[in-house]
Each structure stands twice: as structure tokens, then as C-alpha cells.
Image (cartoon, rainbow, N blue to C red; front, side):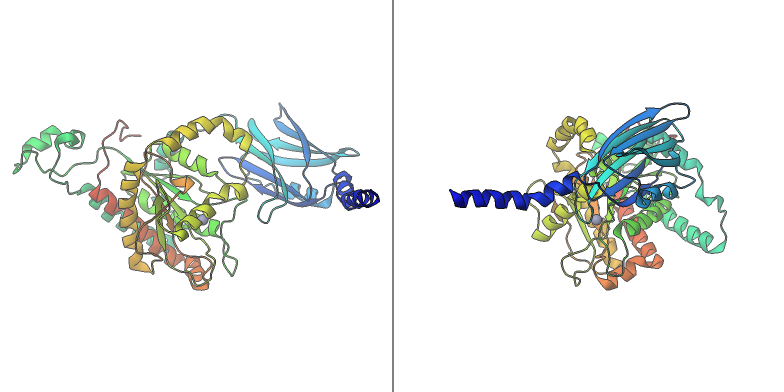
Length: 458
Ligand SMILES: [Zn+2]
């Protein structure tokens, strides 16, 4: 009996520091702002979870956030200086001690916003995070944005020689890509492909086989979704000298967009074109909203040992992963949402849609993805080592659009010092872009896109 009491007291004593900590004030670890056209995120990282209330005020538009149990500190004041002059959503920040225990943050808004405010439990290198995502109240139409992309002619070349030379090289590659796509050699024709063969043209050619072997003219746009991995709060893997995966893959993605887009038949949708985080599910969503013909996710990951090297290409698997390494990589990539920070509350409203999506048969998608992956792997193999000579399969969340051939390219291991150096090198990035573009072109050459209702004049 006595012994039990002692134990009880001991437990109480052991518990005491915890209880004390919970009642003491939280302190700020860091504040970060991630501005992007799509949404601006503000993150306040603290050693304890923060309790928060918020409300919107009109004319002028502002978001008021009250954080309970916090004292104004220099760390929090840093927020003021972190908002950039060109932030699409925030024009300014004010912080003040509203009551002895409540700090008030006022974000002055450039436009009416639909804020999402949520907290994230500690994960990876992060402690508790309080996140404000400022989304536009009226969302832009992604197809319209793609159409406008065409008018932003990069060839208007404001910048002189080195850039112009690079662009000339890029358009040369693209002409080749365009040629390839235009000169698609058709397999000896199952007649179903009528929309690709205008009847007039078909009649004018002599036909050795019942279905005339004509060069099909692609009379519609091809939309390619490029998906630079990670971003914003999620740096992805970090190389031994500090190179971040999210930066490299964005650079490669933007270069690849430029290269592909000099072909007038191609539009590129970037799931992200700046340093901000996009949840995995949103990446798939974005591609499906514009009915992309392809989805290419670009990565440069780390592995357990610094010796690991070479590029790999992955597609979705409908069962077990093709290797333990592939499964490991998929788990790693699928964890991006935890680090990047997803608003689970907002995501659940799409939960049914998502479930339906994932339940759909993916056999055809996987078959096409393997073809695309094979072409891309073949081209990447020409510029460097491959980690595996075959396309691997595993359950990557980002490859789950049931109707879009989707691949994930691990361009190299950023954890390998030599490969990190290559990834940093703009010339190597260009080679990589060439290889990816050729792989994509070869895929379209062998697998012409089906006709569909979208007009070429998008
Ligand atoms: Zn990655």
C-alpha cells in the first residue's frame, strides 16, 4: 500500500514538468512566407501548439488572426519583413500585443481571399506549425491560363546573346520534336482512328492496304503536365553540399516547359512554377482538370547510402512494388504531404472523389505509362548512368490519375556528391531536359494522341 502511494507520488512528480510546460508561453521558432500566384502561405513555427482565432474584414480587405498564449517577440516581428513587395496576396503585415496573452496579426490583403488556417503537428525537422494559406476567392480557370501562356511569347527575347543562343538551341530541338510528332508512323491501321485522318486526305493517297497508311495530322493540342516535386515547406532531399531537391527539379521543370512549348502544338501545365508546396492529390487534380495527355513528375532524391547513383523511372503498380527500393522510394515520396503541410480538414471534402479515383482501373494507364517510361529511360540512359535499366513500379500517390500516362523520374541521387554536382550544373540540366523532351517525343511518335473534343485554338 505504502509502496503504491510512493509510486503515485513519483508519477505525479514526473508529470509535473509537462504540466508546467503546457501552461507556460509558447515561443516562436521561425516564421516563413511562401508567396506564389496560386496561393501564399504563411507559417509560424513554435515549440508548442498555438490556439488561434481569425476573421476577415472588408474595405480594405484584411485577415485578422489572434493567437492565444503568446507574447510578442522579435521572432514574430520578423514576419513583417518577410512579405515581399510583389506578394500576390499580402500587401503588409502588422503584429501587436492585443491583450496580455493574445498576439494579433493583421495581414493586409491585395485581393479578397479564401484563407485556410490550420495547425500541423511536429514532423521531420519541424516543430509545431500554424499555417495560413491565402487562396484567391475566385479561382483562375486552368485552361484559360494555358491559353494565355501562348501569348507570353518567350521568343520576344528581351535578353541578349547567351539566352538567345540557348533559346535557338531549344527551338531546334523542338522543331525536331514537332517533326517527330507530325510524322508519326501509324501502325497498319485499325480503322477506328478516323478523327486523325481527314477523309479528303485519306482519299488522295494511294492505299496498299484497306485502311490507307496516311500520316495523321495532329489536329489538337497536346497538353503535358510537368510536376516538379516538393516545394515550399518541403525541401525534398538535400545534397551533401546543401543543394535542395525542390530547387533543382523546379529549374529542370521550367527549362523543360520552355523547350516543349516552342512546339506550337504543345501546351505545358506546371503543377508548380515557383517555390510553394502543392499536395500530391492536387498535382493529380491539376493534370486531370486540363485533361493532360501526359504527367511527368520530376525528382532528385536521396538514398540510404551516398554511393547510390543513376537515374530511375517509376510508374504506378497495381499490386506489389517491383522491388524493395521502389517501394522505399514510393513511401518516401508519398510522405511529402506531411512535410509540405496539407490542410486535412479541407482535403476531406474531396475524399469521396479521391476514393472513386483510386478505385478506378489503372491497367491501361500503367501500360501506357510503361511505354512512356521506357522511352524516357532510354534517352536518359544516353547521358548518364541508370540506377536500374528497367522502369520500376510502386504505389506513388502522384501517379494515380487513372486516365493519364504518368511517370516519376528520379533524375539522379542528390545524396551522391558527384551527382549533386551534376544536378547543379546548368549544362547537365540542359542535357537532362533534352533527354526528357526526346523521350516524350518518341512516345508520341509511337503512340499518337487520340482525337478529342478540345479545339486547337485554345
Ligand atoms: Zn522527391
